[in-house]
Image (cartoon, rainbow, N blue to C red; front, side, top):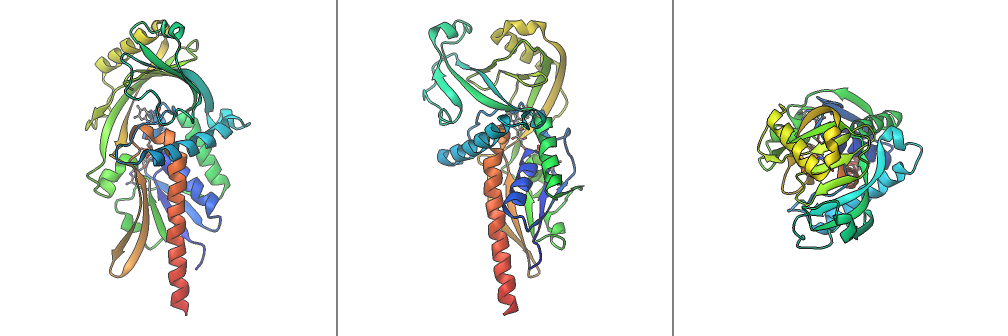
Length: 341
Ligand code: FAD
């Protein structure tokens, strides 16, 4: 069999990182990324890019932990390299605070982030409305920089990148041996997945360089995430809402909530509003499927539905998707050598 041709559909953090993992694990493959939108026009560009896992109720915790660990280890190495500023990856320390003590004192990821500990009474004085908290150091991506960095790495490894809207995965069967579906919320239309739904998120990006620690309310709704170029203030979680239009009332509400956690934000300037649709599902769809028409088969690997936590687990799920692509190629090579006998 000639060099296997793999098409990855989607150019958010999941598509680009999956294409990179495939190119790294299968150097003989010819990998192409096809997408109708690229940075800065993807959901991935809107994300705050904090490595704090979101829980997927339909996925075993040990699997989620593995995905997070692989992602953290990968980005930690980048943060510690000369690439850190171009890739937009840095460490950030801060607090997750709770109005009522959470049921479980230790989240599953507490031994992966750095220096995780329960906050002292003295630290909690900063948050008079909260009675319990965790302090830790994690990683943050400046998402547009990271997407550009991934695209640059892809081009350097010979991956082709084209603008193309795919209306049916089957349309790729005559050009590619394996197709990888990383279309995020686009999978709703592309493969008619009724289990995926949007969870609208509105955030503000503000200039407030004096805010250097992250602060996250334990309910996950209100957060302040300082980054390389701005501070992300969030947020909202609106299930089933497809609107990408910023809502001025929500902007005011987010700003007030964040100011009640960090009053100095009243002096923030240059407020920009962003909206994204989290591609949410009970569990990430990370599996093989073989499409078949008229006796012709097309192996597909799905990797979408990362909801509120795509950045936190992207490298782990990309590695697993690349492993599944390897299985598809091995099966194709097995059947082509059997056909020659
Ligand atoms: P996308 O970025 O949407 O990429 C999908 C790609 O597929 C796009 O390029 C699109 O053009 C392409 N596509 C779709 N359909 C087709 C088609 N038919 N043909 C061709 N191309 C197609 N996660 C974290 O881990 N940490 C955070 O701090 C965080 N904060 C967030 C804050 C907000 C406000 C939001 C909205 C999300 C946040 N997330 C966060 C979640 C994260 O953004 C997502 O999980 C992640 O971006 C999903 O990536 P994706 O590549 O699957 O989707």
